[in-house]
Image (cartoon, rainbow, N blue to C red; front, side, top):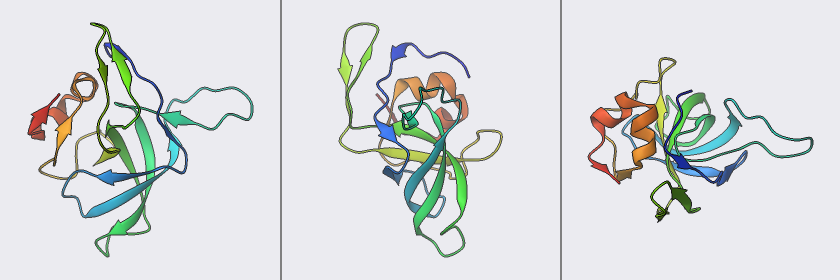
Length: 132
C-alpha cells in the first residue's frame, strides 16, 4: 500500500457498520477484516481512512445483499491528524465498494471524500464530487 500524508487514527473495528457512499446497490456495510492489519495478541483488527477492508453487505439491493465485497473507508467519525496540524473528523462512517483492482463498482460517490483516500486510490478520486 502507498503511504499517505497523515497519521490516521484507526476508528473502525471489525464488526463496525458504515454507510456505502456509492451507487453500487449496497446501503450498509459491516467490516469483517482489515487488509494488512498487524496487531498484538487479543487486539481487534481496526482500520481508518484510506484502509482496505472486507465487508459484508447488511442491507441493499437483493443481488448484493449477504455477500462479501472489498471496500475502501472514505470517512470516519473518529478524528485524525494531518501533517499541517489540522484535526479532521466527519459526521458519519462511510466506505466505497471496490473491485479486486481497487476500482469503484459505483459511478458516483455521495458526500465528501478524505484527501488521503485520493492519494492512495486515484481511481476513487475520479468519481468523487467533494474532496476534503
